[in-house]
Length: 326
Figure (cartoon, rainbow, N blue to C red):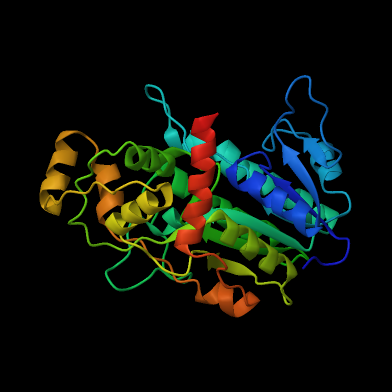
């Protein structure tokens, strides 16, 4: 349910999550302003789309214009994958898009009197794995392992510092792997492997990974925009149940209507092979657990995941089939 005629500014609106969120807002009648980095040449922008060349370097007047009449910001824009060349400082490469852009947008939000600033962060702020049988909670100490995660933590901290003592409430949503129609990167690669009938040596893996269907995420964003009082601070968002990697492979296969091809290789051998092939980080993600606790978000907003894993994967598989047909 929408809240009056309040306008929500969405950055990164043409990304995977941003597109899903704006489509959701359009369907539910929530007024929004979609900020994108550039318009496609030759295509006039829709009335609610605003091009901002670079949030980290755009003039303050441009950011102020973006937020005129805006009651809330959902900040999705940023870089998730950056490659350093030679001796480049990888942390410095992430900083402009993920930290400086967040700080400048937050300052513009404070100047504009925006009431809520929702920032999409990452579970990676808390590390790459959770202890067996214990999900990560918002109050756990951060433990970022790479430059991307460090940049997200820095962005969270600068957001809190800028908004502290102002009328703008900072709300941080730390997200696990998000899937759904339009998904890219590792999840899409896994779907491709399952669809091709590639035999995956993962049947012996006994882990638990939190995932997040994009349909559940947009519902959660609705909830934090509408909750009274606003749910300040850090919260995790995830589907209702964590899943093991072999069970995820089986669920993807069921959604694609193919037979899962799993073989059992002892996990120590998988990790040894991954080290020899310099794929240790990938194998760690496939074999370790990474569960998050969503209690704080559910308590503060009443949000509950509406879609099951099977439903989310069915929608993703339908998109995958159409994508390959085209």
